[in-house]
Length: 433
Image 1 (cartoon, one colour):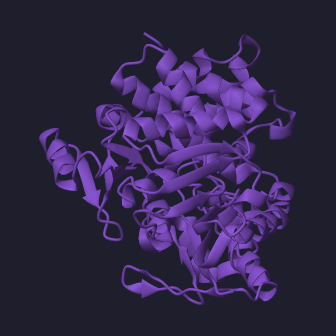
Image 2 (cartoon, helix red, strand yellow):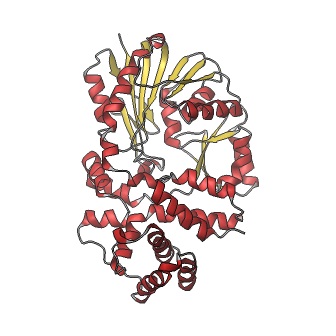
Image 3 (tube, helix red, strand yellow):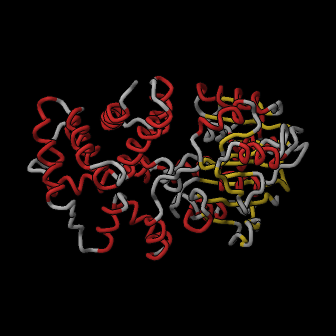
């Protein structure tokens, strides 16, 4: 039987060296290992937990280690992170077990050092003196780089930032979009009740269910095409997009395909959806997903959203631009996103504007254009849309409702601490001439 701590340690080392994505790493390791259900859960909790609390752990380790974090080798550094995470955040694991198990997976050269640092932390009753400055403290405790805090504060103000940073712990639920082409919400709920799986019906979208169980317990529902994973905010974006039966739709940046699938279901599998992506190797995700869901109106196409396609000019009833973004709205599910370099974020708005500008040409007069991101950053959201509207008088904002609230100038932001969903931005516009 595989050791979950050893696997978590190996995953952390790989992530440190290769900047691998956490969700892909977890799926790969669990599928290739011989972990029991309990140990798979422990492996996931350790790997995701350390990733989520990376800055917190490094700060705490720095208070007890005689060697700076930047001087430690990758193996020693990640062994300490694994040990400190168990001691700081996993109350059910005894201290002696956290120490001995961590030391056992260390490289031989650093066993004594790691043991000494962990025991020093315990002797001092696991105390950590956090920074006195409020935002430095928030940065350490929430494990959020200062540049992201600056983005949130400049975009939404101090109080909203406090709320956002207080709720960034990894999300344990899975949001399922029910495929009403094959089944019903009530039928899925009956299955969950029978299996005694905890769930919550989402108030913003009555065909989305938040399920609090490992994905392994839902594999049959997904493999049968009765449901697929889609967050409430993403599903709401499609509701705002509002595709109808018989329409011709363009999903300009479609992979992995969730919004195309939801659109097709809303269209009752009648009409046409062109689902584009820059990378040919990703198109199979859309094609396989559509087939599994019983959808035949989606055509996957390799296409760069920035490059003009003359045959698309004024062709579509609706165009969706769910553009590449910094992903700051989904860090509770993908905490590794927090550790991107600031340059990677700053480079995005020009690309986003270019995609929106180009794809707007494909909307027929009277048709609609939706711009969306899964980030929380005005520079990638409101500023991109405002810039587009100021230079394109053939488009106007189109107001819409989300639950009990309404858009502002055709724009709406989903905040995790308010909607319980991913952080998400949607803007809707109509072509008037």
